[in-house]
Length: 385
Image (cartoon, rainbow, N blue to C red; front, side, top):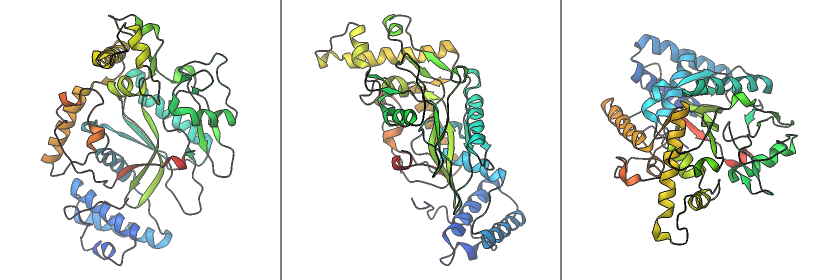
């Protein structure tokens, strides 16, 4: 999508930048100017510092056709990209994001090391920490090494057994085709390997060690049947299919994690028809009347499962937020942004939770849904498989 700068966020128009930001400037030059303008607004850097930085960017553009973000600029770009994420309800914590600079990584083996490091740092023994690892930027004529997986931790789908996560059917087939050997006793929650796509070469893949992946068994103190289902979920929602776009530079692989909201697991992952489709099994176990929709058995089962997920994560000491706190925090984020003179962009359909949305403060709100730079842009599915 195009850079969403509006009249309220024009390209930086200082004397050193105005020539590049006009109609005769190249797209990357204009985007770099807009990026520097926003940086200037939010960091209040002296004019001389900005002028010197812009001259360095211009010199790089003249020589190479692109430029390199400083470490501080990359850190800020990652944080603001989270702040601009229209589908994320957890943006109150955007300043806490730690940006891990992996731009010099050149081999799949080094990328594997960085990925393992990311998960370890993010997991933090259950006290989940938001992290983003930024891999090398796109360069003309340079092949990109990207992660096949959509999430770092994903469960296999066994179609012949009717077990697992249906969303990962294609990834399971790709992993098997490239030599992955699943557990002898295939189950509902077999963790898939990570596959790194190397254009023109066989994908590099690796498996997680058992201790790498923190998983939480799901149970409920008042409904023992929940534990008998054998359900569990992993602690860290880490997305692999994002690119970071900032100031005209595109980083094709940006590995990003936050922490879970309970409804993501209990109202979507474990119950959606194209995922685990577990609600009827739970309903039967609870002795509910599945033959009559008006009995509201689905609502009752969802409530029990959401309680179970929240309490299981709490008992394990693993960070998770419920949808009432998460949406209240989002409204606090909106207030802070307004106080800072910035408007909030959000996709309402993603901000409302998938359970009891009308009982949350975001239900009757509206926001524009513009994409802003810097941003995390999701890769099309056709680029992944």
